[in-house]
Structures are given as C-alpha cells and as structure tokens.
Length: 234
Image 1 (cartoon, rainbow, N blue to C red):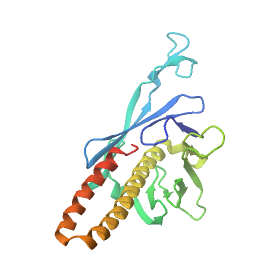
Image 2 (image 1 turned 180 degrees about the vertical axis):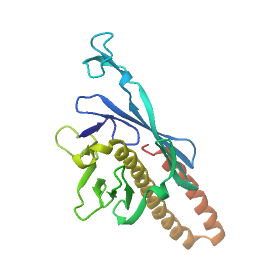
Image 3 (image 1 turned 180 degrees about the horizontal axis):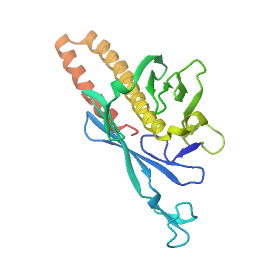
C-alpha cells in the first residue's frame, strides 16, 4: 500500500491512494511560541457521491470528489510538557506510549506496542524513517520516503509505503509517523540552536564583559527562536 503526499511535509498534507482519492488529511498549526498541534482526519464514506443517484454505494464510480473528513487523532506539543496524543478516545502521554532507544542520525529510535500486542520500532538511523517489527527478524512494516528533489526527471513526491505486515494498522502507522516526524523537527531545531548558541558564547565571551555577553546571548537566543518559528516548514 502506498499513500502519496500532496506536499513535501508530512505534517501538512493530504494523503492519497493510488487512484488519487484522498484518504487522510494532516494539518499542523503553531498556536504560540511554545504550543503546536497536529490534527489527523480521515475521509468518510459519506464524502463520495455515487455515479447512480440514490444507490448509496460507496464503491460506485464517483462523478467528483466531495471530501468529508472525520476527526481521527490529535498530537499536542508543549515546550514545558511531554507531547500528548489524543487517539481512539484516549489522552495518551507519549512518554508512556513510546519507549526510547539508542540514538540514530536523526534522533532516538522509538518503540511502541501495536494493536496486535507486538512491539514495533521506528528507526531513526537515517532521515528516511522505517518501521520494523521489534524482533530478531526485524520485518519491515512501513517506510516514509521524502521527496526526491535531486532527480533529473520529475521530482518524486513524498510517500508513505506500508508493507503487508503493517497493512492491518494503517492509522496507527500514520499517527506514530507524525509524532516521530515532529520529534525530528524539534531535534534539528535543538541542534541548530545549540550550535549557534555555542558560537555566540565563544564570540561574546572573548570581546565583552561577562554580564554584557550574557545579555547579548539571551537577546540573540530570543531572536533565533523567533526566526526559526517564522522559517519553520510546518
């Protein structure tokens, strides 16, 4: 199963099936400097118009889309608290739902328990997240492919490929992917912030008194945070 994204960012995109029909919609909004929320919706059967009026058959050929979405899940981020996942009628603390493992190039691996009671692991070894069954076989369940902008041909769109072992839990895969994607975004921002902060520390500490250097560092840190929010790709 392959879901193609309408945008490069999985955090703000429509997810389309092979036939072009929208399956999911994801919207991420920045409420304030410390709060961000991601809403996941899925298309409902009522959103498709049957070719023959009055049949009510959702499998009928459609004349045109009339997408009606139903709310599926929310992920809320707060700079002061652990992210909260609202899914299947529950408020889930992500610190309880996910178990962190060793570091990869793009963050720490995350392990969660699927609907079948088995453990699954999102690998963060590369910036192409892969979901595997957390056992000795390490069977691949899903992979998120980012857009290929360097191709000589038409740019490849971002896509979420779900393999047979993961097809029974498509919604769970999407929700957990969006969580680890936001964690990657936050990880990259922290890395940039730390690097710039250290450079300012060295530069300011050499040429200025400590109190003045500290004030300049605080100001530059606030400016950097504001710039990063404005330049965010969300």
